[in-house]
Length: 93
Image (tube, rainbow, N blue to C red; front, top):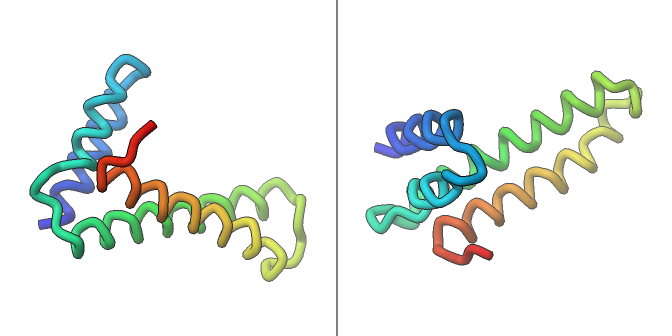
């Protein structure tokens, strides 16, 4: 079930430090991940990036119009989506 891996990643990320980076990457690059699981995980990460950037831009007052705040949010979501896929496929550093 993909939710179990997401919760496992969140718990691992909370406890991780710079020295524990390999543990976080190990959760993402699990051998048992199917393509569907990888897409679900990447979509969740992209969604978090989108809404996190959107709320940060709107809260900081840099942009008043929500439509203009979508552009940096889309860039952030795309970056996180593809980086998540790259990490899960084993393309790290």
